[in-house]
Amino acid sequence: MPHSYGLSTEQLDFQKRAAALAKEVFGVHAADVDAKARFPKESIAALADAGFLGLCVAKEFGGAGQGPRAFAAVVEESAQSCSSTAMVYVMHVAAAQAISASSTFRRKDEVLRQIAAGKHLTTLAFSERGSRSQFWAPVSTLTQSPGGFTASAQKSWVTSARHADSYVASSQKPGAATPLESALYLIDRTNPGVRVEGNFDGLGLRGNDSAAAIFEKAHVPEGDLLTPLGEGATAMHFVVLPWFAIGTAAMANGLCRAATSATAEHFQRTSFAHTGSALRDLPTLRARLADMSVRTEQARALLRHALDQIESPSDETALFVLETRLASIEAAVDVTDLAMKACGGAAFSRQLPVERLFRDARAGFVMAPTADHLKDFVGRTLTGLPLF
Image 1 (cartoon, rainbow, N blue to C red):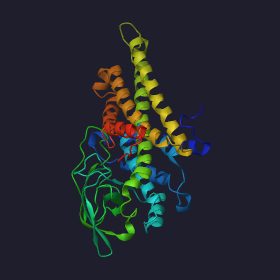
Image 2 (image 1 turned 120 degrees about the horizontal axis):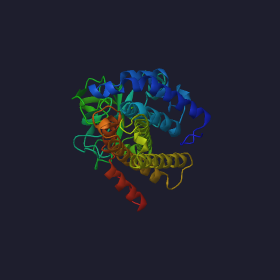
Image 3 (image 1 turned 135 degrees about the vertical axis):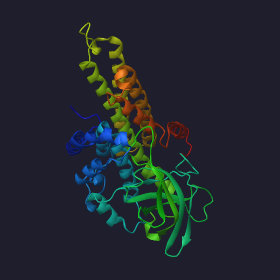
């Protein structure tokens, strides 16, 4: 049966390999990762060893040279077993794409080869305490200094904050008139001016190691700029946002599939002792399961269309990329809510993974760009307004 995302034979191989890792490694540790709010180190190590950190890095740097279609399939498989692992992976790939697209980064060859070899984990550091979920408007600034710049920033909600080797960060350029006059740069976690504060103890995605990264007069060599000064927002819009949107949509779809599968299995194996009938014999529960499946496949179909649009761009490509993230994160909230209601006490008492999926779906829903931001972005696109 053809894959919903229209995968080629080569892409199907990556999807199947990811599914095997998800079953053999990610799923084994997922409950413990969630309970202890710990980084999924075993899963990320498995992804690195299998070459998935370099899945979307060009072959000339040692990567697999895959695009958004294979990326979406790998993320969806990962999220079905451990969405914290999927979140870390999405942020890594989105950040790596900013590095790949750079024409100014002098260490590009070195860093991409390390990523492709599974020896470098990167992530995004855009959101700040001052701008909150409006990640495209950093309040921090770069100031000119000998050999480059000095960065001072309070970055918030940085995924993999203590485990990433580098951050793709944003700040206003020196003398910027507006926050949109920004630049992206790569800053190593081991930079003497970088420290991480706090431990993540959130409702969902509890293993993603989201914390504040504080830059205190951190030196950024001129060669570590990922964009020319003033062009950071352009890179966010045209490089980072599409990859992030596709990745998080696939992650949400994975949550939907996992919730639907867990609910169906619960209906089949649970019965009433006094009648001998199974939960699946109740038409009301079957109807809920049908709603879950339809909503899931609707979101997956829209992601397929967005992937087609990316490969054959049109004037509507940006619109469908935004809509697929919106549709998927809303579907994940609705589908996992239905799963909790359909599975009742078994879900509420955490006998099933449904409760964890329910919480993880809500974490993805509030992540910038939030559902409200996405609706505004879609409306702006439809009426010819700029996103930012």
